[in-house]
Length: 212
Image 1: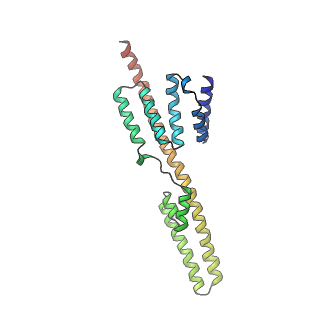
Image 2: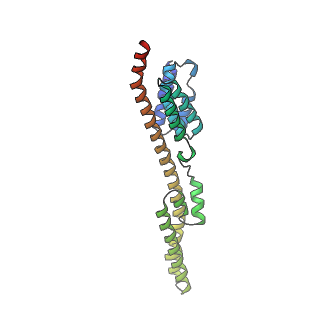
């Protein structure tokens, strides 16, 4: 119906704009009982990508497997793609769920470890060394009686690098979590394109065989 078409278009636009939760909500409002088999096959790829964006891996894998079974592919082709989908959604291949809070907590106890947790080991090492150098400078200056220099040049810098490192670690965790999700969805979208391409090339043959 026209309402389902509007919901599909809205979900598609919301996904492109980064509002994946709203996109999933609109996709869920589509009345499945009013969809033809053809329309259901057309909607499935978008639903899979939206589910991926919302990290609903099990439902996305299930939807993808069901979609494969509705396509005009040979039994061997369906089995091959089903195996590929199973491998894609294995735990080791899923995007890492970096946590902003975890990254901040790591950096709170060990400066630089939050950046390492977020997948930036060299930046984490540099942060650890910088914090250590600032702390050492402050202690050294105070030990020798240069209290002003110790507090301003040493612990003043340490204050900025310590809390700045925590903030940076949290931001990196958010960035890497989104990058992981985007990379996964690109892989999934590439697989969907290959499936559709194989469907378009094999479908005419299927129809010709049916006519014979």
